[in-house]
Image: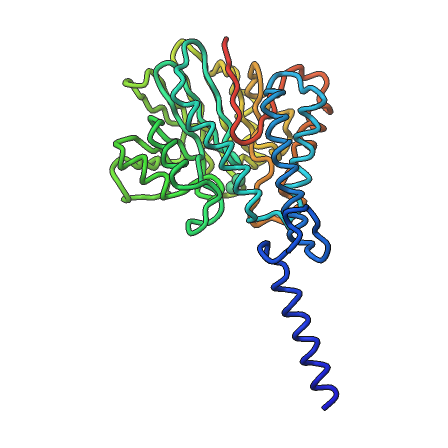
Length: 345
Ligand SMILES: [Zn+2]
Ligand SMILES: [Zn+2]
């Protein structure tokens, strides 16, 4: 009997402890006293950190050099995003949506010269010229039932884009809801071979996984798809040539040794201005030399997907990789979600 009472008391206290973790029950929350409420404490701390990081990134904007305050903001972001306690929490959603809302609003600002390149969640980019706005690997993140980026924001952004290019089928790059929204707006989606076949006439997977040129006369650009791979997965390397303005290349999840044979010579055929490589690509330096771009914008840092935290990839790791290539002399404009950079030839 004694044991039963003890078990009951233990269960009762466990239940009390668990329910005490909800934010509304801390009687001292308004005074910032969190004693006995560690989960609420961490949420408060994350909100404070995300807020100051956002402010610091807005103050120290992306550039070819990274000033110390900006570096601290990026490394602090790595810490927050590698702490799984913050996954799926309100402070995280507030942070990413605030930043993506800025992109939605800024897309109304015309580009007069050159290209404006926006960095989105994971490996997504939007490149805007005076005549075209194209998205590559744009996704809302999270799950379809609970995406990281609110539908009103992501579909608002879709409405301001003219085309979508997909590198490969992995869900951190390809999202059918987004692709269908482009198609519904009468915008073309170029996908790798075998992805979304027969879904919509505006969603156009390549017929073969070979080098393919696709003209967009109304947008004054040509898409050159190079047939890369992530292991045995077809991975389109999208080289977008904005006529007379600039050429950008996004590598998707390129990871295949033998492609380096031809990637080593890409520079002989294309004059690449900006290369957007996946930050964890193997042989980073060899790939960069193959494309010979004027500058880099790495992507894919802090993917909050299925991987354990050691493969989320951090901004500080990208910085270390770049420091390890002192002879390369090609700047990396390191950006996080919801930032942009104006490129001019
Ligand atoms: Zn992938
Ligand atoms: Zn990926």
